[in-house]
Image (tube, rainbow, N blue to C red; front, side, top):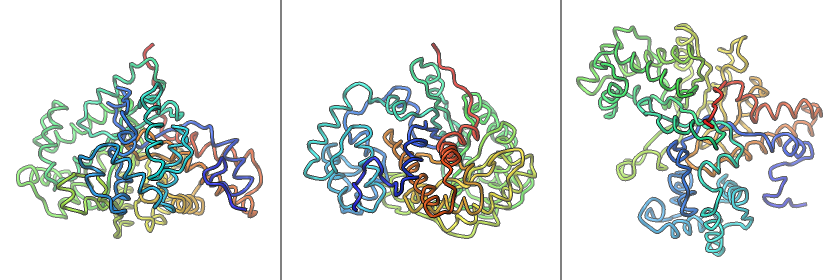
Length: 474
């Protein structure tokens, strides 16, 4: 018997999966501990003039597929009218069967706008009108979309030099029961060979009020910004380790390399590795002392199309999966952080699924008896957050670690409509466990399995991050 598409039992292939999803997972709230939402747009409760602005602005997932479908760039990131861009997406969607965006697109239309038709070129005008009418009504601002998605915590991604003013203003909102907290993303402090390094260091000096012309002052400034984020509720850091390196370095060596970079603008690859290693160990100690969690996002190969990078800049759909050996370097880095004053709670992601056994097994080397699930093998990320990718990640975690302590899904998104990805993940999780029951690989103990599902959906993340209770002004 053929199953209906996107019905209430979408992705649920057996009775146990249906019970686990509908009775245990479906209504759990959401902690979005890694995303790229704008705190300014959250504070201002940004309203969207149409579905294109809400859906297609900044969404490089969709942009990549439109390009692959032959859509001209002016209809993607160019100066075309918003309706024409929406129509270009509507023409693309029917070609995407088998891609998760076919599912996500229709889940978002259903959950947020009550549109159950399958989007295509023919019905695009009617869907455009129906969705835009709702967007221009009450309850569809950025904050409304977050609240209606049952989100309790949002962690934005923020540079150490950010003022965090909008985070502070959000805390003063009396009618918004969601904690919007900053995440510390110090990539520009580490990428010593990029042309952004020298101006960024100068900016760091300005916002910290410290002299950063020397390495000691630079480290003090970084530490002061960590404390600034902590005071604003930040409890998470985030690092893009596109290439994982580790080389032991003394403070004197790192200081000399820092000075060379400020003076000459370039250092050798070995010097860069020594500098990065020293600073990462230093930052890890700061995080550990404050009880933060640290995220390492590994093996993205960014900005591959030089012409389009020059035209559009980063994060526009021209990144891919990286490869290369990294196990020994990552092990050495985590070990050095542990020896230097305590490894913080750490989440390890890789964009390359070939790396999954390395991350899962390495996580087991640094667990701590005093912290539940201290080192996490992070969820399937970016190019891997599809059905098979999520299943593969969870199966490997179950085989090598403790799936019951997994902190679950994140959006990693710039769109306020992306919270259906949590539903997608939860359906996949419940189907995986339900299938184990049907195959006799797990007991048919719904109380045990239901608690496991709820923990993975929400409770584990709540315990893991221990975010501060944010009391909004009355």
